[in-house]
Length: 95
Image (cartoon, rainbow, N blue to C red; front, side, top):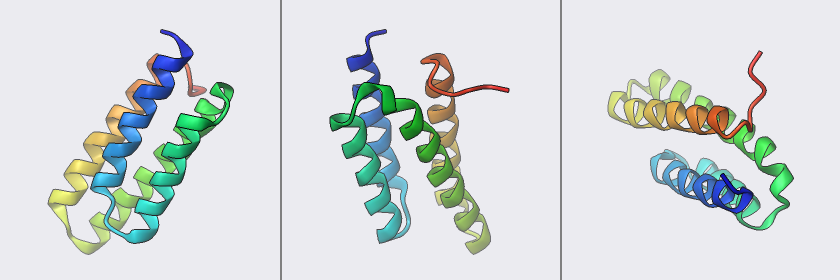
């Protein structure tokens, strides 16, 4: 996969993250990450992937604490997709 393809795919996933965010702050954070994926150096995609996973994980926990099962299900599915993409694209260090 080319680096530009990876940046585009990351941008799409971050757009989905914006859609499942449950607060204005999370929408803003996801938009910032998306902008960074689209305009930042391609070498920063790993960092963007890690921060996107952290943000999604936080969203999942917030939804669980509020008992919002439908939001949790959407966020958890996206978290799995982000993790799979990051792993397959070799953007994440798996230990």
